[in-house]
Image (cartoon, rainbow, N blue to C red):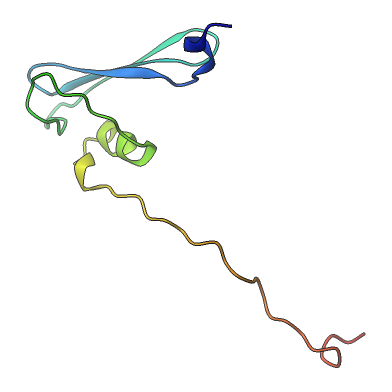
Length: 95
């Protein structure tokens, strides 16, 4: 299988000059998908048009699609818990 087909969700984002429309194209493993959205009373938050490449994580993409400022979305590292629950002594366990 070609490497482009292995990369599920690999795709791109296209915007209109007026920044009120966005199209997202990606490969889902079985074909090419197109998502298009137009905002009636607002504009999508994008950097100036130029030769810039923008990479968004999942949270930023969801903010962009909802018309929010995706540049303000940050991911936080969640630390794995060291233990879960309360450790019971033998006499508290009821056994």
